[in-house]
Length: 97
Image (cartoon, rainbow, N blue to C red; front, side, top):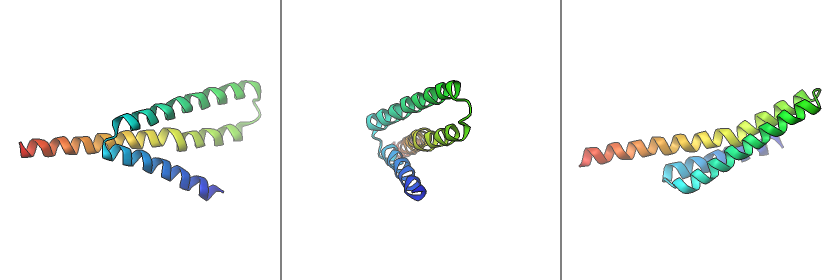
């Protein structure tokens, strides 16, 4: 089960990387916004859960780690890929002009 979740996370990051590399700005932006909104909702849920049930630290920690793995990292990977390949393209265009 853990291996399956790890493969899912890697695939989700690869999708973000591919979209950034290909330059699909709108799709990557929509996915990144969705990732950010879901991460904030998870954070608020974990904060409210901590206030009502202070003894459940391990579950909150795992949920936060999962949120970072599935939501925050892919958004950063996609933004980094878009920025990297956009800069390379702009530099090559200047060389050929």
